[in-house]
Length: 223
Image 1 (cartoon, rainbow, N blue to C red):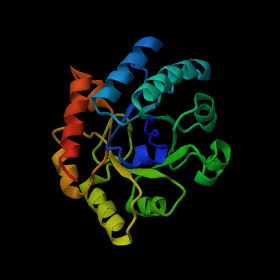
Image 2 (image 1 turned 60 degrees about the vertical axis):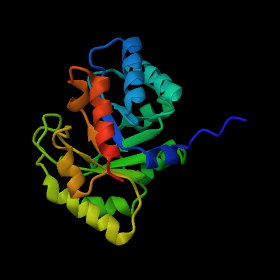
Image 3 (image 1 turned 120 degrees about the vertical axis):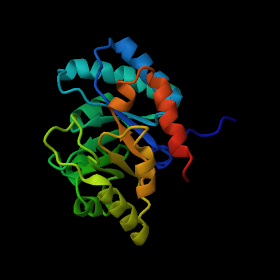
Image 4 (image 1 turned 135 degrees about the vertical axis):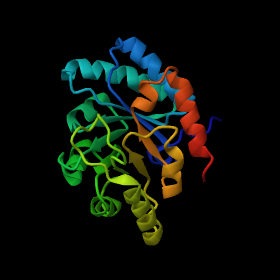
């Protein structure tokens, strides 16, 4: 008898490496193959976020991402839009501070879809710990062109979140985000982060699967 497939919460609990990406100018088929290679290299979650796309085209790319995620036993996410998350049958809907309230999103997507939330301060992170979010992100740790104009929170915010989680006994997964690279990863690990969200460290690498594997290996060195 085949063992049961891990549940979405179980996969999230073990996730370390989260990639946010646009379509990268690839065809749907090539995008699906690219995502499958990254999942196989160690990426645990891929979020497709491409605001240039019309909804119909975005759903086609999500179909390719969904197939890659299902084939590799990984998670995939939509950003902001509950309607896209429903139609694309995503595992995760990720929300920013100015997006749908978590309770409203839960009412739209149901209990089976995981909810993530972006936070940009210690106060927002503490609120997320006690919220309906299944995970949250803290950042940007360093300035990043993917979030122009947003002030960096710095490593102190990462350390603050790590301390608050430990003090409260919160076991909710959380990710550091914002210009995360392999070279900067030791600083994040020293501050208490164990999970990261990356963009350019993988998508702009000469060898994206190799970059993903190196990041995952470094994350796995710390319990």
